[in-house]
Image (cartoon, rainbow, N blue to C red; front, top):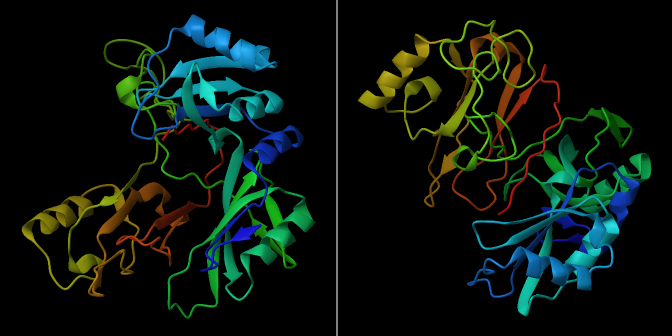
Length: 338
């Protein structure tokens, strides 16, 4: 394992190729290999698919395992396979049709992430990784500690990325069983077909009704269903964002007409503000305020916990972490190209 000097980040000492090969011992979905122009300022031109296929067949002896190939708007190529050996052969490409390239793997469909809470800051990330590997036999890809400089807290959350998409319900670390929940960073959902696979602007599927989840035209007369699980219930709503509003309701010393209007809307709505008075934004002068608000439907607020991360990742805003006790994990493919 390789650890950063600040002991906030630890990365597996294994190469990308070795980690990909080890996928054969884990559950995973598709392996997506991203091919980019070696010159970061240039794109790969739109090549003739026949020419590109002929080149790949000549260089990759496991080419029959390639399931899909597509060009992205960023001028890159994504090749999809479920064969780890084929994926490693693609990663070893140094050029494509006389174009020098760099390669990387898109980890979203091959790894899973989860948070460990109340991990002692006196125990190194390396020791935590060794404990997890010893007790559960998992392959750690990276670990990140959420802690702020000059912080006196003795414990902090740790974000773990492991190889494979299957997560156990519990993990034992230092004789303590921790409940494990999947951590999804910045998920995006199409508002036309409600898939997690792509944004709305590139959706080519038939739009579905946001009330019943079916395809139809005109006014919806069917019973209301959850768009995600098809359960016969309305969909609880979460709203997050940098509202940039000050109000005494969340601990500010000042307010504005816009913030007053927002609070009036909130108090007359079916939503609940989850934030306490903990600040989420800090200026370079050291002053802090709460600008990033988190809101959810009142019907689920009793089971939702909201707290501000100790680490700001060298930004002026700290992450806000939300947990929902009654959330059942639904497996979704969430792909990120860049």
